[in-house]
Each structure stands twice: as C-alpha cells, then as structure tokens.
Length: 375
Ligand code: SAH
Image (cartoon, rainbow, N blue to C red; front, side):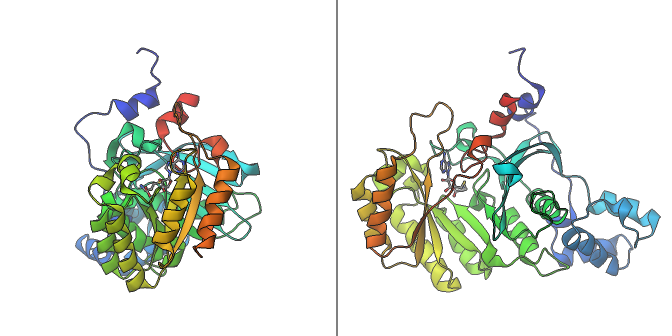
C-alpha cells in the first residue's frame, strides 16, 4: 500500500465529504450572469465583455482583460472565473494529431478529454462525469464506478481548453477551429442531465453568450436512459443523439449494458425514434464489436431488421480491450460480414477508426487511474 502514487490516491481515497466545485460563469445562463453582475453592483455590459473573453477568445485569465478596469478584474476573477480544471499531463499520438489531456479538478479528481484533428474537422471527446455508474463490463471507465458528476463549468472548461488549443495552433497543421464535440469521454451524460444541458447551451449559443458551434456538430452519447432521451427531445436543441446499443437482443444487452434491465432495446429505440421525429436528426447506434460475443451474423441480421425502417446510422467500434479483459475485437472477416449484412438491409454503417488507441485514448479506455499507473 505504501507505493500508491499520490495522484492515484486522490482518485480512490477521496474524502467522503466533498467540497462543491466553485461556481463559475459557465455554470450560469446568460440571464443569471447578468443578474449576478448587477447584484455585485457592476454594470451589465461587463457580463458581455466576460462572455467575449471566455467564449470568443477562450481567455479565462481576467488579469489579462485589459478592457476592464484593473480593480474590477480581481473581483470578476473571484466571482466568475475560478480555476476549474488544471492540466496534469498531455499525451499525443498520430504525429500529434491526437492528444489526450488529463485534468485535475479542484478536489483532486481526475478526468480526461481527447482532441483529434482530421483533414476536414477537429473533434474533442469530453467527460461528463468522473467515473461512471453504468457498469458496462467492456468499458474501462465503468470498472471503478462513479466518483462524481462534473459541473457545467467543468464540462465547458474542457471544450474551451480544446477550442483554445486549436486556435493557438497547438495541433500540427496550424491554427484551426474546433468543429465537433462528442460526449463520449468518461461518464453517462444523461445521468448528469442538467449540467450536460447547460454545457450544451454554452457550446451552441451564438457568440458572445456561447461558443457558437452548431448543435448538429455536438453528439450526446447515452447508454439509453429513456427518461433522459425524452427530456432531450423536449429541449429543442438538435444535437446528434448516439445510442450505445451494442446488441439488438435484450438477453445479451442485459449483461453488456446493465441499464437494459430497466430500459430495454425496444423502449430505447422508440425514444430515439421520437427524438428523430421531433428534431429531424438521424441518430447513431454505437456498437462495439466483441469477438464471438455480439458479432455473429444472426445478430447483424436482427439489427438490420430492427433498423431498416428507422432513420439511424450504425457506428461499429472495434472493441478496445480494457486491461485484463477476456474480450477482444472481432476478426476482420466477421466485422466485414457484419457490415455487409447491415448494408444489405440498407442500413448506413461505418466502422469507427481507432484513433488514440496507443495512448489509451480510444473509446472506453478513458480511465484516469490507468494513465497514472503508467507514469
Ligand atoms: N456513457 C455514454 C458515453 C460512453 S463512451 C455511452 O455509453 O454512450 C462512448 C462509446 O464508447 C459508447 O458507445 C461506449 O459503449 C463505447 N465504449 C466503451 N468502452 C468501449 C471499449 N472498450 N471498446 C469500444 N467501445 C467502447
């Protein structure tokens, strides 16, 4: 026990009594920001100036905000811009085009985000929770349970940091614009609904109140919490919905995605259909292909029949085995056959690339403890 690295202890030996993360500009709606500014006796236009610094220039260091009087900057820093995430380490691969960042939150909890530059877009994969309570047996994050929900500020901060990295040309290829956000890092977004929605609004609101990224470029991925999908349907923000199905039959899904015992395949797909009907947005079905577990041609056939009349797109993800896992990715010919069967049903299907695999930055591998143990 004496050899437990300090950072690892922070993840697992956290004090039971948590201190709430400091309240941040990005936790508030634009109206709340203005109201708080007014409460502090500061003119309302200062809220707008702060928004421009934070969401247009990705600048969260008030002492550099030269359009604001110096004395006022200190109080704005304290009341609106507390430091929420601190970079512990970045690891890169793909000649620097994929970068995984490990962040420490105010209470020592660790989360990760992954930034990926492609020829036509730059995507950041962000965490919505530290850990995850959904317990899917093939996912690294699921293995250690839920530590805590992230706040909207902490989620937004990952996006702002990624936007800044793009803007400042930190990725090879020169400065670029962050174009896509996927909630596919650690955590189940629908289990932290309000904070996730506040951060989605921060991402999609036009400048200066938000980053001005289009909702269709934001993907919210869920295990299939039907109540969450239903709420999202009512929001009127047409983000891309991704449902982690992983198998078309309840028998196996009860094990692969344990929440299926509460919301089964039929209920999840019906909720996704309603989302599609309301928003007009095609949804994604995420399917990790696991050798001899869910990759049989009869399952592809069942999936094809389930989806052929739905406005859905299948994203096949070759399994990234977690350490010690008895499962592995499908054989290439089984994967091909799976794709062929779905295509025969006219179901659009893509096989996801495995960006970030070497740095444990690929889907389902984001588990802070793992990274730390590599140091
Ligand atoms: N809780 C959300 C986000 C999780 S991560 C959800 O379940 O959708 C995003 C995707 O990666 C999910 O589809 C998840 O099932 C998948 N995933 C998790 N572990 C994986 C692994 N080891 N290999 C491949 N995909 C995995």
